[in-house]
Amino acid sequence: MKILFLHPNFPAQFRHLAATLAQDKQNQVVFGTARKEGQINGVFKAIYSPSREARPETHHYVRTLENAVLQGQAVYRIAEQLKAQGFVPDLIYGHSGWGPTLFMKDAFPTSKLLCYFEWFYHARGTDADFDPSESLTPDDIARIRIKNTPILTDLYSCDRGLSPTQWQRQQFPKEFQSKIHVLHDGIDTNFFQPKPKAKLVLPSVNLDLSGVEEIVTYVGRGMEPYRGFPQFMEMVALLQQRRPKCHVVVVGEDRVAYGRSLPDGKTYKQLMLEKLPLDLSRLHFTGPLPYAQYVQVLQASSVHVYLTRPFVLSWSMLEAMSTGCLLVASDTQPVTELIQDGVNGLLANFFSPQEICDRVEEALNNSEKMLSLRAKARKTIVENYDLSDLLTKHLQWIKEQ
Image 1: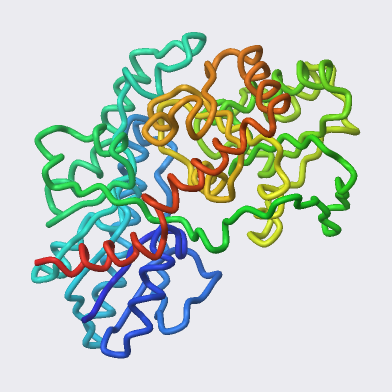
Image 2: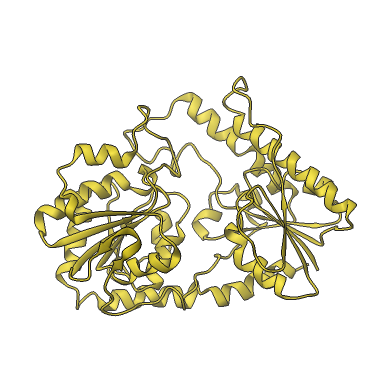
């Protein structure tokens, strides 16, 4: 079988699929991407590069669409080169939204087109209007509607689609949901596994918490309101006042991965450090970590905090659960698809640092009682989201006619 994966980043959600398919010598696996870094054995990378970005004078509603078209155009050029070399895929599997999949039914009319549908945007009822302090303008509402245009094109064009959670599938128009199968990417539960009495020592970032008994952890690609970073930091200020021996470890980059940046150029980390009375000797920012160090943070965690708006669910929450973390998480729809309060985690009001702090303290004060929650968190992932099981199902889904 000839397979063409498409994603501007490499290898993203398709890492395990591409690697597994490439192990079969009867398969020819090509990955179209804009990212030059990284390799997978047996996978040929076809690098594409859009000719330009959306022009500043383009109407701001349609800049996202223009960028998607430019990405699709660049991938179409790559497709023409692949055809000239004799490669016509039996199957194309791409991430919808950025544009790489837009013209694939035109470039390869006989190929099956599968799309990974991660999110459909709404002005009301999910992430955009979740925070009452951030009012939407008519411009915002119109722009959000138009942002779905490349996704709608893919929904029409694709043969089949996939979403990682029921919550995410539910965001797509009902008339297209029958095309979308729900299947998570899967978590490597052998790698993300508990390590009782683990001590946290990371020489690469000069962090030694081997003598610390209470470690609260937080993980994010960035540090932004979408993932509750301001509320988390306000919780840390409260927690430090209450628990003088507790240390907090934050893993992630000082940037905004989702949502808006601050208008004055400050990062949210800078803002919160200026705003709050924090003991920086007990607050540790590691920056992004390699997986081998990231899992050590989770294994040593006394309580792991995960907060999110009603948006795409982070892999990190499932990885923390697989590692047996005691999870305090926001009582929001993406989370409650997996977490039942008091059973496999503790839930708190996203907007209440006080309540989040109370739940963290409840967890710290009852560590023995909370062992069952840790075990059930891991059980949830092992039974429903284990990579080896879901990868097999993913491969079967791909090969369906």
